[in-house]
Length: 224
Image 1: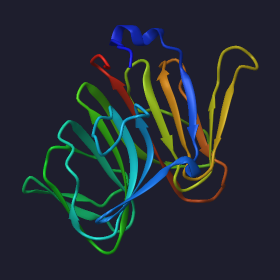
Image 2 (image 1 turned 30 degrees about the vertical axis):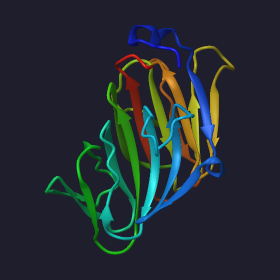
Image 3 (image 1 turned 90 degrees about the vertical axis):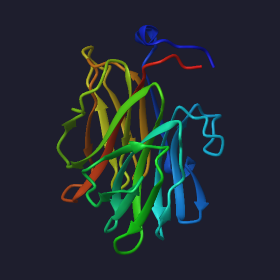
């Protein structure tokens, strides 16, 4: 992989990519299953733990330990279910609210105790040298802007697991507007996205209560 330093990132061309739900791989583990939404670089793997970032959603069917990722930080939030308590190096953290993101070191010994039945979570893992954030937001049939504070030329992730989502980008030149339509479970990745181009989104299903997950990430050190 070529080396990119932060000062050079402003010269990268923004790029949009949709990963459809049918393209996402699902792997089984002792406590449930994990759906990999996206991984970077594409040739990296969870087994080798050589990825720079990974976005995934896990269904946890029984209490037990989480896999350690010593070279990564983790951002974790609930998507479905009653939640769970997470023991992190002997300290307890509650994962019960879809709108609260828990951030912790991947090298921590973490063990989940389910509150009441299986849960589904969303997980963003970032290698050293990366910064990022993740949050869930209610989504309606009205257009909403992507308002998460973020650095210039960061990569944006928009994942709607509950409903169909329409995303648009209004540009200054007439006829240059961009639109993307996501079915439930699809992921939109906007790479190296400038701050002056802020996407807006809405659900196409009126009257339904749903939420989506937004995230951003950016490398602060050279990528090797």
